[in-house]
Length: 343
Image 1 (tube, rainbow, N blue to C red):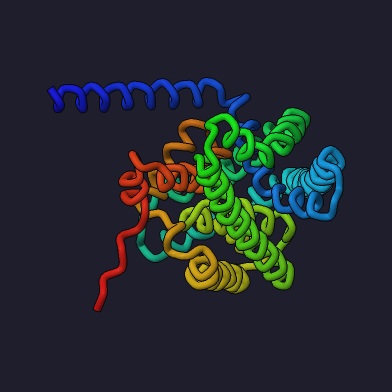
Image 2: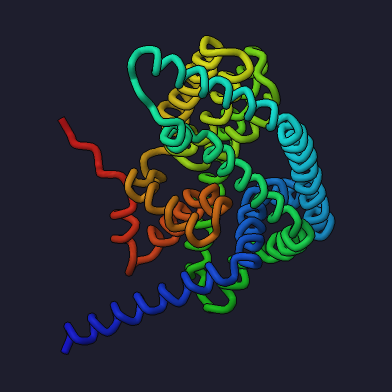
């Protein structure tokens, strides 16, 4: 009888997950801005708490926090929009140059006795596919930014509620040691992860932008922003961010500078991703490589390219929630990297 009850419970949980996942995918136009609002509110919480600590009234503190968000997001939107527009105008020139280089490569291979069909070469050497993915990513971001008003309004309501929720939960449960402490712990851990990841991504974007600017690659701000965004996707993100920049450097400046661009990406991502980020994150906040890849595929399927950007932060939120649950803590252990072996 006990096994039957456990089996029924498992089927019920699995069916509920299927319904939730289907709902998330169907409600993407609304759910994605809401997810961004929640992440933005968590990132903004330290500023709100600091203002309240300075005896600023809560309505004014929320207003100032939201205004700071609007200024930051507005500046990013203006920079991204201007850079993408300029790149789009210059893209045909780069495409023609890339075709010429492709033709020259085919001629060189044929001169060495290697017969390569132009059709096969176009299929194998298809940088346009990567460019298309980058363009789709920026288009998706633009679509999300078109719901800017919804994101900001939702963030305002979340900020009003989030600082009062532990007290409300304590009163609702009529317990001084209630789940409000767990809720506060979850908020702090999620905030810590997203905050550190954002700072590391910002450092990555700045270093990459400065490096490609020194080398003379066009649109360094665009490539810096791309490195910042894609750094939220571990491992694969740095590759996706580097490929279009390498192609542009190859077309514009030649193989030598392109190699230096690639070297800069390797150095920055290895230094920050392998040494700096684990130092500040700690092993506890890690995810296994398999989980990272599967989360990338899953959230990309649910919410498209922007879901890929948010895949690891969203999975980390789920992991932190599971860690603070007695019934599902074992799932959080499975999501984490393998424990280090002693000796």
